[in-house]
Length: 324
Image (tube, rainbow, N blue to C red):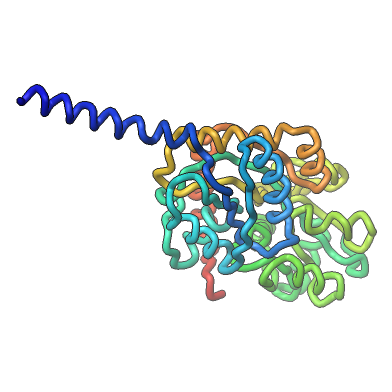
C-alpha cells in the first residue's frame, strides 16, 4: 500500500512538473496584449506597433496594443504587474516607469520583483532642441545664457521624472547652472509650446523631434547620450561639449508579470529578437531615430537593475519629487 501511495505521489509531481512545459509548448493560446503607458501616436506606441506585427507572424497569434497612459507610465506598469503570469499580457516599458518613478512617487509594484524581463527593445537618444529665433546653436551658448539669467531659461520636459527632465537636471548639475523646469503631460504639448516660443528649450526622444529638425523649425544643440545618434550625426553629445555624466538615453523594454514560466519567456524573447532582426522592421526603427537592441532576458534583467540604481542615485542627489 505504501509503495502504491508513493508511486501515485511521484506521478502527481511529474504531472505538475510537466504542466508548465506543456503550457509553454501550447503558448500562445489567445491574442497577446502589450500595454503601452502612453497615448497612441507617440514614439513608444510607434515602436510597440511595429514590433507587434512581426511578433504576430512569429507566434501565430494576434498581438494587440493597449494604450494606458498616466502617471509617467506607472498605471500601465501596475496593470501588467497584477496580470496573470501566463505570457498573454506584457508591458512595453520606458525607463521612467521602472527605473525613475519608483524613486519619486508611491507606486503599487516593485519594478525588480513584480516583473520578468523578456528583452530590451530599443534605445532612444534624448536630444536638446531650441527654436531658431533663440539664437543658440550649442549647449555652451545655452549654459552661458542660463548663467546670465539664473532660473530664467525655460526648459521643457515630458513630465517630472521623465528622461528629458533628468537630462535637464544632469546638465544643470554638470554645468553649475539653474534652469526653470517646465513639465508637460507628454511630448506633443511640450513640442507645440516650443514651436510657439512659449518655452525656450525642450529635451525629447529623437522620434519626437526629427521631423521638425529636418524641416528647420528646430535647432538640435546636443545629445544627452553616450554617442551620437545615427540619423543626427552632426549633433554632438553633451559630453563632447564639455559636460560629463550627462547620458540620459531613454530605452524601451518588454516585461511580463513575475512568475511567468521561463519557457514562455524564451518564446517571447525569440519573437522580439526576430522582430528586431527583420530588415524592414529594423530599417523603420533606425529611420525613426531608435536603435534596436534585443538580447537575452538575463541581459535585460541585469541592465534593468543597473538603471534602477543609477536613476535612484540621481533622484536623491537632485532632490527630485513628484510634487515639484
